[in-house]
Amino acid sequence: MEAGNHTEASEFLLLGLSEDPELQPFLFGMLLFMYLVTILGNLLIILAISSDSHLHTPMYFFLANLSLVDICFTSTTIPKMLVNIQAQCKAISYIQCFIQVYFFMIFAGMDNFLLTIMAYDRYVAICRPLYYTVIMNPRFCGFLVLMSLLLIFWVALLHILLMRRLTFCIGTEIPHFFCELAQMLRVACSDTFINNIFLYVATALLGVFPLTGILFSYSQIVSSLMRMSSAGGKYKAFSTCGSHLSVVSLYYGTSLGVYLSSAVTHSSLHNSVASVMYTVVTPMLNPFIYSLRNKDVKGALGRLLSQGAPCL
Image (tube, rainbow, N blue to C red; front, side, top):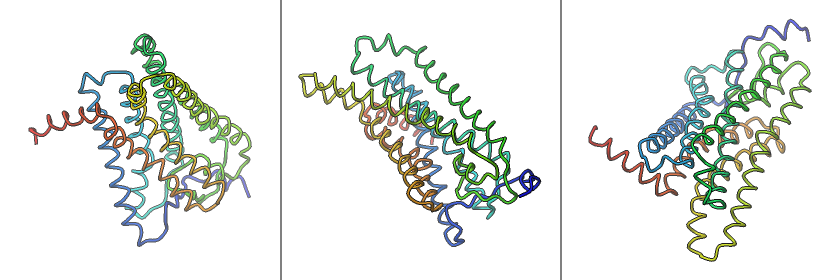
């Protein structure tokens, strides 16, 4: 194929979840509802934490950041998909696609790092309770979030710079509902060896290492709990981890489902449906998990809503 045909591509075609015209209104309504619930739920968590001084602790500081990242994570993909369904258009420009890849990687990476930091926070609270306020001071908490952001910023930027070397054919179709990095590499018309190597390294850095950190933190927590003589003390200590464990299981479970789906089957539909789970469903359920399983957040939300009720 001529090089000229490669470099002329100014847009891509996102195939979406389904090409069936009769399903489009249902998909639009479902995704719009889920997106609005995600935004509202996570926004309420942020407002509840910021408005209640009792929740100005490291654990809830990280939770507020997680909610903010989840809002941005979902907003990276769903609005464009809703616009395409409504306009009955599959096109996304070259620049828009690269921007979507970049910010998707940033917010997905921040999700991983924040979940790892939250596991470390629980480890310090349960295994090093006397040193908790010294170790998890506000400056150190801010440093952890900032360093995570800077690291994922440079990793995502390197991915984009490497992708700029690639060429794409005119009318390239992406069998997904957003510009996902792995799919972009599959449809490229030039050699992607270096890109794939860096993708594997980045996956280990942003996926395997954070998960290892979470598993290590909880192994230490379980070991510490086993040494406690009081059953009530064990339950009270571990109950603070319940919401976080649920979110970790949901996030990594759905991510693993996407990986296995793409490895076992090459069906773009199965891969796209599996991706909806961790790009839309997980961020939508996180606020419910934390509000239903955490009495402090539930109480703060109740007070926030009761304060807002007289204004309606």
